[in-house]
Structure formats: C-alpha cells, structure tokens
Image 1: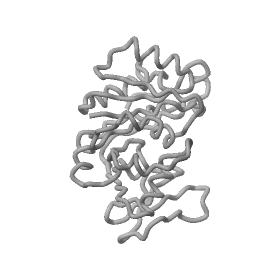
Image 2 (image 1 turned 90 degrees about the vertical axis):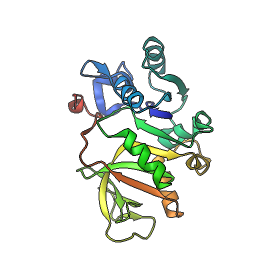
Image 3 (image 1 turned 120 degrees about the vertical axis):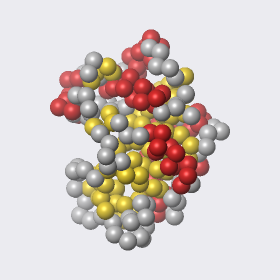
Image 4 (image 1 turned 180 degrees about the vertical axis):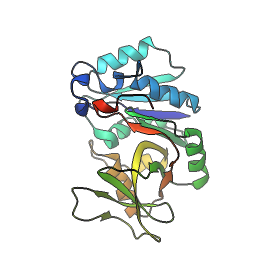
Length: 233
C-alpha cells in the first residue's frame, strides 16, 4: 500500500522551533515528527510513501537519505507552497494503479488504528474516509447520522457552510488530519494549483460523492502545531 505525508508546511505556529528547521524534523520525545509518522505508516502495512517538501526541503531530503524507515520513499518538492490539495494533485502520478491510499499530516501524533481505517474504507466503497473525533477546536466538519460529511463550521463563520442535505441530526467533529482516499478522488480534483483538500471534500460531497467521516473517539491524538504540544502521547 502507498501513502502520502503532508510535510511542506512552514510550521509558523511553532515559532523558534522552525526558524532553522523544517516542521517535519522538529523532535518529540527525541525523534523527528516525520520519523513518528513514517513508523506508524510502516506498521500499518504501507510499503511506499511520498513526502512533499518546501520549507528547508534540503534538510528533509538529507534526513530521508540518511535514515532507513523500512519504506520506499519518494519526495515531491514544491517550489511554491501548494497547500494540501495542490500538494496531493502534484503527487497524483505516484498513486497510479492504487485502489486506495493513506494521507497523513506530518504534525499529527496518534494511536489511531490505521489498518482498521483502511479496511473500513475499502468495505464502504466511499471516495474518501476522514478520521474524526469529538473535540474542542475552532474548525469542525459537520457530519450527519449516516456518517456523511455535509459541510463545515468555523468560529469565524456566521453560519454553517452546508453543502448537502443531511440525513438526520448534524453533529460537529474535529478532523484528525488522517484520511484514506480512493483513486477516483484524484480524478475529481480541481485544475488549480494551490488549494486546501478540505475544500475539495466539501465540493465533492455537495456533488453527491461519498465523503465519509470515521469516528476514532477512543484513540489518543495530538496536533503538534504549537510549542506546548511538542510532547509524546
């Protein structure tokens, strides 16, 4: 199985930690975030991974060349930041022939059952399966009683951005930065070069595609985007 790690971001919220170091190589528990994520993917049965890079890209590539993580690793270098959607679109050729694949943010630590997430996705026939959990935050995916992503809500929004009619009650969930995508998703991505993958999820659910939320309530999870969050689970 193949996977992608989103690792091109500037890591601005980490302050001094990313002044001379890419976010992917910021350490937690004595190991770079990238090493944590690659280890999780390898343990879940991933054999090949592509990592997008931009900020201090040379450092990330040097680290990958010097460290054997038990995976065949490719690099997608972005001259300009493409955001998550544009980054995936640029790397789309890597996934040719794959039925589905994992996508994981580099700054996410968790013990989410990735094997189960992939298995559930394959059984569902969905275009995308997004790991979610109920948690406090400023941004939420709005999920109906059938586990379909119907829209989003942010603290800076006057009202919910609803893209499809929900089945039953709508509930807010935090997205965990981990998803499984079917290859057909790549064919539906917009032609523009830079955009958020979340915007594509919302556009596709509005078009009637099956964009699913998979609850991982019992898992441990942390977004390591701030200095105070740089600690082991």
